[in-house]
Length: 256
Image (cartoon, rainbow, N blue to C red):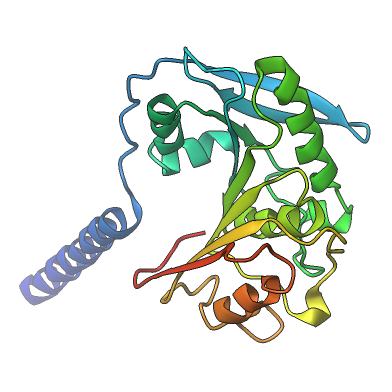
């Protein structure tokens, strides 16, 4: 009986140790405390706009002393995300920069958390229903330009992962509305998975930022998934203005 009790004790103790180590590893690798809300001069506001019979929402930030004709930056969240999440994930960085350099920031929300980018396959409702996010985002800009007095000629867009893919779509289909875009952890889809219709006006200036060890958006592309980063960059060369392509790579993985 004593031997059985000892075996039982050490089995339970071993199991408890494994659970504790697993929990510790989970929090070490996956959990990061939320950043502290910084002191900002302006306030975040929330809005709604109706596009194609659908109510679309967004959050908006402008410094207290925003000058007339200031730039506007559109920041798009990743897959299954939201405007609130991208603010926290970036450590309120865009708002800090807005206070420092005097521009406005808008965080639009995708339909059910996902953008309808250039890829045909994706499994998201936005793609299956062919949600017109280009019209939504351009309509949002058209609303904010007169409302807050930003410069229509200095509208920029950026996004991460699926938001980065949506930035590509804006660069291709609405270059006259978005002066430049920055796509983070995103690649253009391969020809068999491509549905965007590039504008005859060319493309916006583009900055591409990808991690060389990113498993979700591979730097070297994936069969049936996306072009490699270098090919994505070359794809824009005939369309974009001279010297308007920039590529940045990092060694660390970039999360979705």
